[in-house]
Every structure is written in structure tokens, then in C-alpha cells.
Image: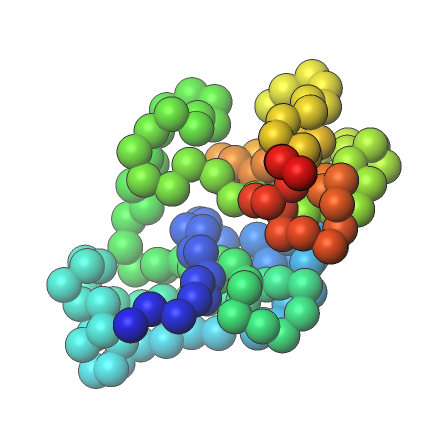
Length: 161
């Protein structure tokens, strides 16, 4: 029986650069620094999914040591296949974006803008009891910033009585 969500993985061309960007720009903590995996066990794990030889470089970033993290992953021996052309999109099949909760969306947007983050929308919206705005990382992964109005509730339960 499933009991929770562990992580989402973001494929990047350079895991060290991505870990640095997620740390310095977004303020994530690097919970597991970039490490390399190769050999029979990783071949057994991913050999049917990744062209051989299977070599994986990964880092885990998050805001605390929990199962709710982002895995930054690089396949240095495989040719990276771009999933889209043009600007980042949220209307393609599969994972379309990652939601990040912030405590002050105006200040967070201002801070990220000064760090060079380019936002995908001009302003901030009020949707279902949340304040929202959208941006992408340098590799095209789309994020939505969410500010809760009711801190005692999870983000998905903000709307309603």
C-alpha cells in the first residue's frame, strides 16, 4: 500500500551546477551532495530505462531532512533528450510543474528576481485561497510559488470554510 510521496526528479545536464543554483538562488539545502552511481546494481535498477552504460549523478535538495525533496539527476553517459522546444510549458503530458510554498510571495518574488530568476507571468494571482506566481529554472523546469492564507491548513485545503 502506498503511504506517501518521496521525491520528484529533475533531469539536468550538470548536477553540480544545478545543486549550486537550487541552493544559492532558491535557498534549498543540499541534503545529499552530488554523488555518482555506476555498476551492476544501478544497471539492474535502471538498465531498461537508460541507455548503457548506466551512470547516474544525483543530488538531493530540500528544506529539511524528510521524504519531501527534489532529486537532481544527470545521466552523463546518455545523450540528454530535450522534451520540448521553445519556452517552458505546463500543457505537455507528464509532470508539468513543481509547487513551492513560501511565506511572503511578494518578497520571495522580489528576492528571486534579484537573483536572476525569470518569471513566466507578470504578476501574482489569487486562486483557491492561495496567492500564486510562476517561474522556471535555467533548465526549463517550471515551478509555481504558493503563499497560503491559512498557515494551519495544507496548501491544497486553503479554499473553503
